Image 1 (cartoon, one colour):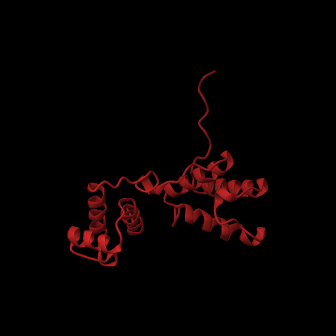
Image 2 (cartoon, helix red, strand yellow):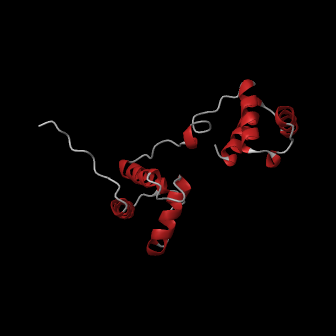
Image 3 (cartoon, helix red, strand yellow):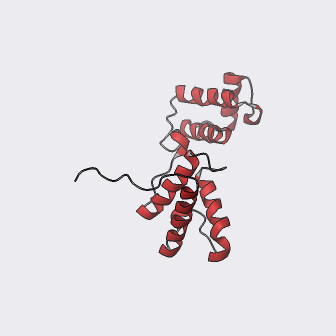
Amino acid sequence: MSRAHLRRLIFAGCRELGLGDDERRALQHLTVGKDSLADMSTPEMSKVVGALKSRGFEPKSGQGGKHGRRKPAPRADLRLIHVLWSKLGQAGRLDRPDRAGLNAFIRSRFGAAWGAVPADIDMLRDHGQIEAVIRALKSWCEREGINVRRPESSAE
């Protein structure tokens, strides 16, 4: 888990348990001997999350889940964009395989042509723009040798 994700978990856990800043710092000091999150290593921050869990903190899905996943996009065409981006990420072709990377790609690739780009891909509503993003990602996948076609059914 990244330091940023662990930090968010620590603050969410403290909120859930009703711990203020002083109590959080005391817990951190008791757990790893450091009052400040900035001074902690990633393993130390993980220990603090463990201490919060032992006190009853239960991360909600999205907090403690794999990569803090969000709900799936509301529309199939937007979900396809996420799937294509994920395939590129799994193939190691992206510097930023996360949602922020996808949004940055859309801003850099389409921002000048569109004039304005939504803050998040799931806010995109124009069918022409959605199709342009899908075409661009499919082309990129094809150039990288990534299969984007569904396997044909063998039932005849």
